[in-house]
Image (cartoon, rainbow, N blue to C red; front, side, top):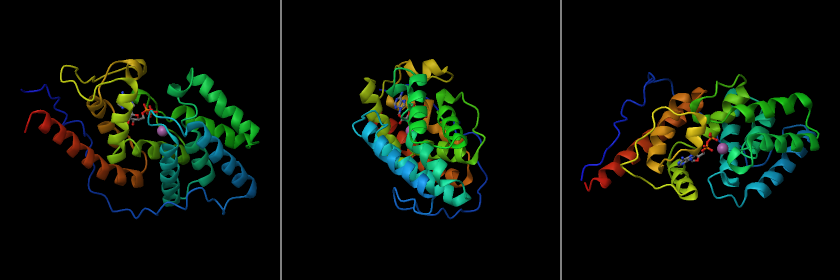
Length: 251
Ligand code: ADP
Ligand code: NI
């Protein structure tokens, strides 16, 4: 049979000129921030424990290990450009505590983040910076404007990098299973345009999600170091989707 395959070879629009290779530092040892002031180290240690406890049993792809990967990637990217490790780590740690999928509403989720930062006596300027990043970093169907601070750009890139590549493929099928979507249905067309509401609650499949979001992420990466990682992961994901269609058609 011939399936209705979306031709998405044009999705990867703004093909970048080959740029200089960037040497991206390795991630620092997980959960070690010994070069930071004592109060920031205390706040980080408490926040690691809090988030682990909150998200360790989560099964929609927003579990503790997703957070761990995002924190470590954000720290690598922060090292590459000299951004603030404390702000990046705190925002990355808390970014999914407020997720609308894990809370009755986005507002309730953001209140939990605000309460935690206050309880930990985080400085007001830092509190505002961290909550601003978390409020505005989500993909939101592609409808949010770019983040202004370097730390915001980095944390958003780190989160997006976890949605591109081998782990991202696994997360997508896990998520589809979690919400009761099929892995693929050739009769269900890819949605080209969608509102945030349609993105979140409309019907889709794991394979459609590659076209509706994952294959678009490469062109929405903010920083050159993250883009370099994204491009390689993107190619891997494109190959995967191509093979999926190939096997679907019995080839
Ligand atoms: P964001 O918080 O940036 O909006 P999401 O929480 O929507 O991102 O998505 C996180 C990950 O969950 C995605 O990268 C993807 O792997 C998976 N996911 C989200 N929505 C879907 C979907 N409709 N179908 C399959 N996977 C999805
Ligand atoms: Ni995330």
